[in-house]
Image (cartoon, rainbow, N blue to C red; front, side):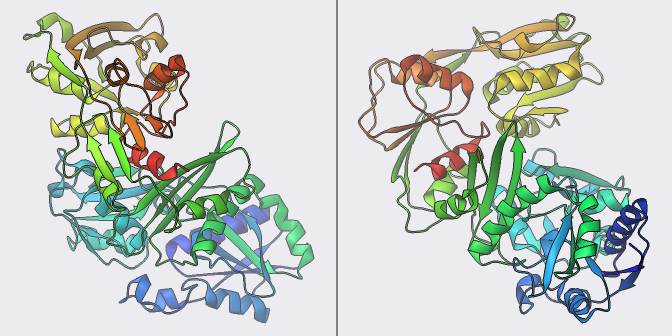
Length: 525
């Protein structure tokens, strides 16, 4: 391309990084460019939260106007800031690779409480102007106080440093791009599965005039069509909900082993408990429409759900279902009892790792008052076990997510080859993780409890039956059969295997925790 391009950008440090990133990529293809800084409404008005600003495109409108006027050739945006419709005459010519769309919770170190979920002290003040973040944070921690926080990334971090908040939440992508040192804070990373990001979070969009064919062709060298395919789902969901930056909507699409997975969180207001949904499909065709249909308030949902676990009044699962007036029958069909009362000193001697597959394993193990070797690390399966370990005052160095224990074992094996790993657990457990470790890993099985099935378990007429362990399945079906029309959810593959043996159809949640179970119930037809 012969002409020198003018790139329109906002003036924040992050926006300039993004514009220079595109400028440098163009230079690699022998295209020269210079930057033009343009101030937007979102930059000028810093005393109002996003839901108080009028219209859409707070950070993009002025750049788009200059594009249409021909004073710039292309505009670089954070894709999540763009309205779902381009102004007539403009198009998105290219999208970047996706930076990690996780969220970071930055906490002042004297406001940390490792016993609490996300390590925030009770009643902490958290800064964010995002209704999406607010709704999801309060769903996990209703005790938190959420206060508005505006400004660019360094400004927001500065406000935390000045102790105007106990913690703030920001996108990991911005911190990574600016290479900001966060060592003065305690940092909790929330994955896109735990806290669903904004549609298109972590992606740059390059916008041009529709009739600038030469520039469009040049920009295809910077375009990532695989990312664009995923974003099309997220952005269509946003469009169908008619939302903008103020909508408490998170949507994240990714391709995993050939299948498209979509995680969605939506509330009507920032302080309302959000609905969560997980869908998986082999194609993106019609996928966004399927997601939106699941949130239709007129859709018929189950009215009664049984779960083989006793739930507290603060249970995420209970709150998610009670929001829709779903009646929950919660009762465990098993009892657990300890099998040892004292821990032999040599068991933990020189141990490098201690791995827990369940909350029961943690509870019974800590009743033994263990003395840990220096620098020992902890691994767990699932968010529930991670939270239980926090209650005991310990962080995890590895959390196995998902429902496939063979995948968890494969990941964990990379960390513990040649190490000594102690596995407190149930007597007669399936040893799914242990079987996936290499031969030179020293494995110490430590039965700390056993499971006893309740006798003469009564059946239930609930529309949906949620089973949280293989033992609960055994206890229920010793004397009961499924009634016509009842649907089954199994918390993980080991529980699902019981239904495979019975020839019974069931649903697996994405994650083996209460959020995953709630998503599974919400996703039932």
